[in-house]
Amino acid sequence: MKSWFGTLKRNRLLKLLSLLLALAFWFAVSGEERTETSLNMTLEMVNLNQNLMVTSEVPSAIQVRVVGSRSIVNNLSQARLTQTLDLNGYKSGRHTFSLGPNSLSLPRGVQVVRIQPNPITLTLVATITRTLPIKPVLENNPAEGYELVSVNTRPAQVTVKGPAPELAELKFIPTLPIDLSFIKEHTVIATDLDFKNLHLALKDPVPILADLQVNPKAITRTFSGIPVLTDPQEARVFPAQVTLTLKGPWPLVQGLKAEDLKARVDTRNLAPGRHRLTVSVELPGGVSLVRSRPAIVTVTLARSS
Image 1 (cartoon, rainbow, N blue to C red):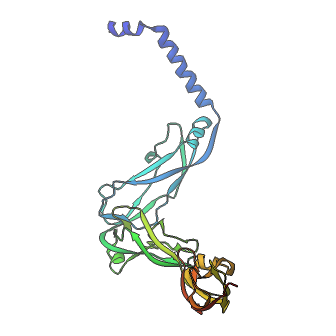
Image 2 (cartoon, one colour):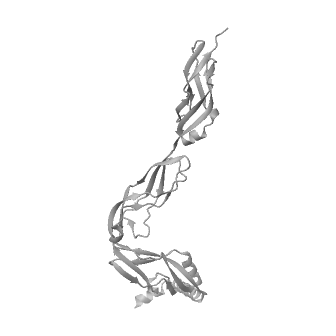
Image 3 (tube, helix red, strand yellow):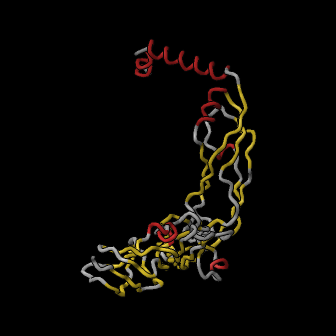
């Protein structure tokens, strides 16, 4: 007993000060204006058996109406609050979870007025897994003058889990629609799988990529009235103009103008007189000559006087 009293006597001033501070804090909190507000608490499910999944609608958060001192309630309003549902040991079926004030982790002195939604009902079902190919879903056509050559996904197939009745009839897993209207070249874009209203999930989540090979369309275009030039010797040409039909990628061929084309015959080392020569055409890379009408022209070199 003496030892206890001896301990009590030591540091009496410090202990008295601590007591006064505690009393002051208690009176401050108890005397503080009380307020009422709603708190959003993120709902998280933990310890779910890996062979089960939830098929019922689950709220992402619950709303808790509370009353308490203004300072504590303000702090709670600014905090990230989470409420967990521990599903350890639960089997397939329908389960109801009633939430009460004691199930929430809130500071002392905070009174819970209302919890919504409450109770929370979950339906747990047994799952199976299947490996299915991915089918890319495309919408719209590539930009004008371009065409889709091939489309593949990476990976080509995925393993999904879900309720047996939902997985039994599936032949593939579609992607979300992929818009082609802005694509003009080989493009790899990230996409996602479209599980629609099915309760499916990837067994091993992986990024889904769509590999789109888009090339310019090959088109042909005909240009008339292209003059035939002689080089290096000047000569008279008949006919003096030709019609050229060209083939190549849409952007190149579509952008060509008649004045961009040069048709020539080679008069090098030719003696005076009449000659039959093949017309050659200077073309941009990637563009080819389908035909020249005519392909051969008559060239007359005058005799020097």
